[in-house]
Image (cartoon, rainbow, N blue to C red):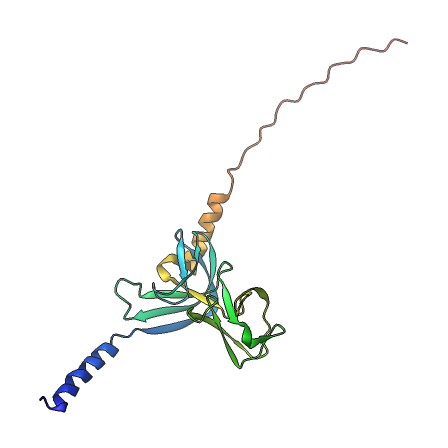
Length: 201
């Protein structure tokens, strides 16, 4: 029989090694929030800064977003982006709360989680405080879909969003492409009215 110490030491070493693999997000708030422009087609918007985060919607090239923070995942999962941007929840996304914590359009809990779907399996993408008003869109079971509250957010890989000067340049290019070509009007010769014959009295 092996001494207990010899069994515990390798187990402890393994635990430390595994715990060292857990990813930590380094978040840098963008103050004030910046405007961004999607730079590719069919870009997935996710509830977490990870490819395993549920997809809440898709955006197209040229769509505008509001950037709230820059997120660095260290270390990222294998094959996943390191850099993400936290954005305000796009209009096409969904925000849900449990109806047991809402009465007459107001939150009754001290803190209420806002989720990306109508189930506790969905990620938390915002929080509400007691007394906050909500606007109901529809119900499904014990859950209520609400209009996006302040602070509702999602994530996009940063390589798909242009912000700052790059976003401004992209916006100008888009405006130039959309502007119709100018047409120079040439003055057409005017017809000279024919002389009317004198009226005989």
